[in-house]
Each structure stands twice: as structure tokens, then as C-alpha cells.
Length: 69
Image (tube, rainbow, N blue to C red; front, side, top):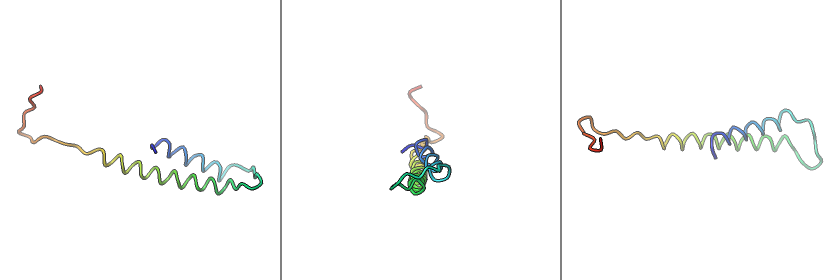
């Protein structure tokens, strides 16, 4: 899940949990909204962790010469 997808889940869940007044029979929109917000939060944290792990900077020693130039 990407960062944008996670934020979208959080926003959709917040709208369902806090702003929708419609109450269909047999469906709890507040609970669905909370579940979406939790899932989006977990996805956001995991996305940030995995993105941070991919940003490993590899540097050459200061005396090394790059032969490709």
C-alpha cells in the first residue's frame, strides 16, 4: 500500500465514521469507518518504514576515483 492509498483510506474512514448520518439496516457505517481508519494508519506506518529502509545511501571512500567519468 502506498502513502497516498493509506491517506485515502484514512480520509474515507473519517468521513464514514464522523460525517455520514445515513443508517442502513444491517450495516454499521461508524464501525466500517473506524476499521478503514485503522487499516489506513497501519498501511501508512508500514509504507513509511519500508520507504526509509530503501533509502540507504552508499558512498564511495573519499580517495576513490570513479572510472566511468
